[in-house]
Amino acid sequence: MTEKFHVFLAGASRGVGLEIAKCLTAQKMQVTALLRSPATSTELEAMGIKVVTGDALDAAAMEAAMAGGDPIHAAISTIGGLPKDGERSDYLGNKNLIDAAVKAGVQKFILVSSIGSGNSAAALQPQVLETLGPVLIEKEKAENHLIASGMIYTVIRPGGLKSEPATGNGILTEDCLVAGTIHRADVAQLVCQCLVSDAANNKVLSAVDRQMLYGNPEFEVLNL
Image (cartoon, rainbow, N blue to C red; front, side):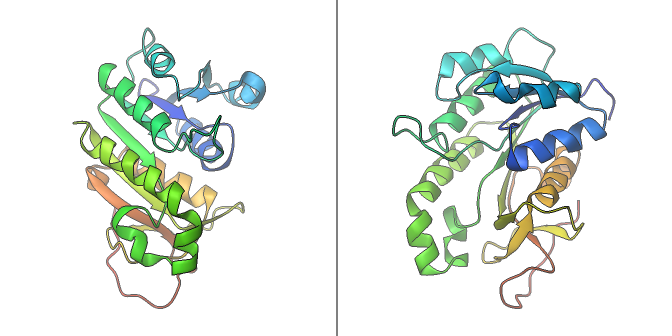
């Protein structure tokens, strides 16, 4: 990929999103990062990333964020989490990003979701599923909206997340019954690999560390 490959990244202020930002800049890609607040922009700008601000719950703001600049080849979203005024961004925020990406002519969209969403609900223990249920319903709605968007899509559902250095053991599988944990930095590496690999196109994938699986399942790993 050349420096002209332009990626729009939502959720870059922390967690998996920040790790993805580091990964993309290491690969010399052109990155525009969406932040809800400019408070965390300094670190990203120091990495050579262009920062735009806007609330993903505002559809017009998302259209504006993706319009008017260099053409965007791919978009990545890791947004979700704490509700604002009772409205979670897991569905509505991602819906607005997906719709804006379609209007902007984006070719490929990678959505970071969660194991437990959609048909991977059976991978979680009942008590965990009960705790996360409302969030997972929102994430599944976002996944379905992306799949129906017409863009090339990849949905990546990480297992339990840890904030430790990458192990290099992160793997992707289409097997929706796999569960385990994975470091955020490894999720980021998998996302960046999917960005430039056709093998992940139009797939819903679970992401786990091969050394941190729950149980001893047999499953097929996606080769990127």
